[in-house]
Length: 269
Image (cartoon, rainbow, N blue to C red; front, side, top):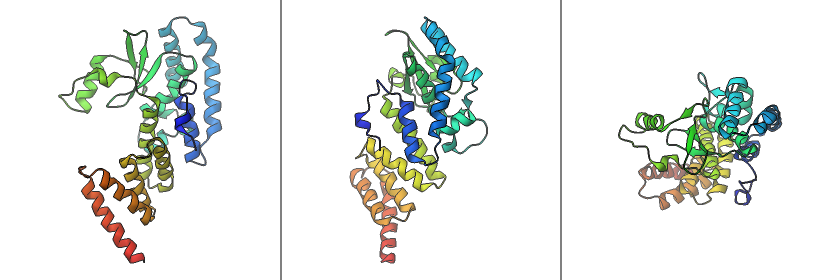
């Protein structure tokens, strides 16, 4: 299993890490397809990007190929969330979320050493381009459009609260490990909803490698164990959550779950 503490994110991209993680989670994950597709696309644009000297023009070349020529796009119609998160599906169907599309797109910027970074905006993942210390702008991974402060402020007011105000904290660069955590959390929840408990447990175990003592992650693992009828380990995890987060409103629901599991243990024995 990947040791996140030993990863040097200056020399390896989030995309590469997540490809390895996804191949650990899902046995039939098409890792070679993903890597070969990425290498082919980099080869296709390499000369065009490296010959260009102006940062914005380099970025526009990548965006043109990604969205206009290769046809990556926001998901259309109804799909299972996990299907638009697995990178092999994204490369096959060319549809994804802001996270799957954004992380794949970021790999191109990483490869060409361009100053484009992820931002965990409250509504979705966005990408921050830093021309210099005083000048930056943003890209929407769904379609490659450039975003200004007026659009981002409208997103906040429309999706979070009408009283929300755009602040610098909303726009700061996010650490790669936080992006990976968010993507895996979305994948875990999707797999739970799809009743794929074995896969969701694998995701949970990886998340706990990132944050071993996170009571919320331990709670989720406990809930997954309870669905897999692993009552004793589920009980241990859920009790840990209640003891560490007694003020959380969901603690009362978890206490009820604990009592249900305890009754099952007594019945089975």
